[in-house]
Length: 354
Ligand SMILES: *Cc1c(COP(=O)(O)O)cnc(C)c1O
Image 1 (cartoon, rainbow, N blue to C red):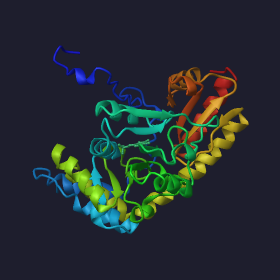
Image 2 (cartoon, rainbow, N blue to C red):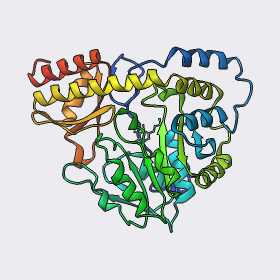
Image 3 (cartoon, rainbow, N blue to C red):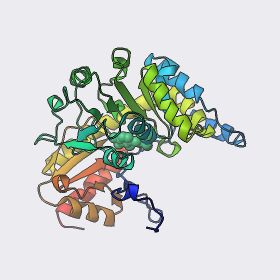
């Protein structure tokens, strides 16, 4: 740290992304990327748009707002486009939270929530998950604080049914409720339909997981017009060109190829269930997942050791040091072939063959 770094960041511990190794070629099951390439229309859109990169992008990101509005039956002015959904989350923390408007979220959830709270100097409360790692929605009813919940949650993969999400929103009319739906396309129920009914709801989604565009950085919020206006005030006060030309073109093309992506999500959900069963057969405890990953604990080998042994054998999964979950690993669902290799390798590790 230099002697010039502001002391407002004294307690800030930056978010640590999953490894993105540049040397060996790993089977990457550690950052919840899609194993499938973008559709050919998306690749063509990127090539075409590259020839126009001397021009600024559209600050209204109209093509994306229109495409999302069409997909979900909302109005384009109920959509906020962003550079990945992490940016929308940060905008929402900035716009609606402060010393007098604290936020709460589960103790085991997306690692960025406490970072955004620290970064923006917002008091936050971490509400423990139940013993079985589920969220008790009643912990959030009538809470009287802003709330952010990932549904499905990460890294557990477990989802709340829509009626419980609605109870949380309904019982906190004077607070913002953010539902982070990064993984919703893999089998959970979306709350997007509720934005017409509740003016305190923000639904956040991303092209990173279900639409094979993690590297393009495209996310969005869906909420009532007034909330979107507030988020746009923050967006235009920080980075009005937050979504670049190539990403806008790719995102619009991806929405027009929606069937391709939804079919990939279905394949991933099937491979997830296959992998879950195979792990259970090898004496793992596996949480019920509605996401593109599994959260699992071996009854025979520690989480960290399994992670290390897999890495030595060319497979990356995610291990978290946090006490409550240190025996678990988060395993992204890849192609069926990748998962067969993963399962074979786990089997050999357990048999002490490698
Ligand atoms: C991956 C993820 C995001 C953000 O992804 P972006 O790539 O920034 O869109 C947000 N929330 C959760 C829970 C995630 O896992």
